[in-house]
Length: 478
Image (cartoon, rainbow, N blue to C red; front, side, top):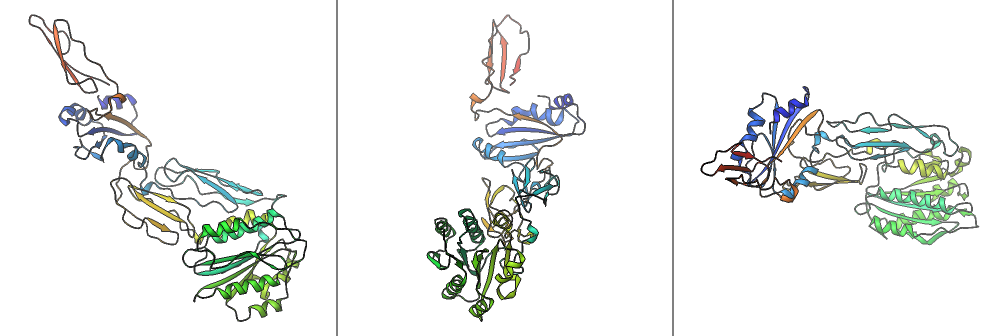
């Protein structure tokens, strides 16, 4: 195989040229001097020779070598190519009020974006990861447009400067969900989803406890989860899922709910230096007690009371503001806005984003997300050992690392001409390769051959009194 001649046929002058030779520990290096000479010596072109050496004791031919223990490991090796840290474009945050889908973060991977109803996409709908770790453009944003089915998010007011902005850590919190005459089962489930979002961003198994209950004009004790009932998110979620929607024909009052919020947090308060939050859900059908009642109830308490008010205009909201302090109110104009705008964006401020961790060289990672309580789990390719923690949680900065290896095609093949030479040895499964067959014995002569596959040889000789016509030694081609 004259590699130089093959490259000349291609005729390109600006492409990098690579020749790959695969060999194993059953390959006779001396028998392959013709291949090496054709690649290295018989051309003045700039051709890079790489060898893929299969087997623990294999001698690599020359140049840049990839060592692989066995043929069974080649597929795994191939799957890890082009995954070095310098090639990683990194994760992309979904746009506010939109969605994103990403195939990966390496060369050739794509990210696509869409916006929620009532928003238009500004920027590119699709981005692609470029060769050396950069996305093809900046991520798009979702811009509000006028629409009949979406509430204007500019009237949404959320509490500011709370220490749970990125998630709950070292907190106790209880949420009260109301059921009123005009509340639908769908709206009730949206409130439960809000509670789940709080829970998903909670370090429940370590430092934080959570509770909740349903109220009408009275607290529904059969639908109450106390702070010490669960220390597992999974168990808490299961209990929350089975709480049913019950209709009511009575007026709904927040007075008993406020008393219950304080009681639950006070009774479970056995820890010091723990911040306590009470979340009271209300809508316009909830009767709120006077500010004097609220202030007397929480006077001298270390509990922070927040009100989640859904469906109010500014005039009606005034009587629902505890302590006459709007920083304690989550004001959302409708259940649609709570579901489509508030819940997806909670705990997703840019300052809470840990970013996509780097993939270790000769390793891999599985990432659940890049915000509080999300995790990244690292593993190594075969024959490598992890240095550093196997699992990290958002908020920590330690990432396992290894020394990268530089090569022009580290991140993928672009503007490159490539030839692959496979040295066939007894270690191959012969059924996967072309068999040249047994060479015919000439009339009045004889033949000896080393095998019937690529680079095997057949030697011909004549009986006494006959002369050979043709080539005495033939190298079998693929």
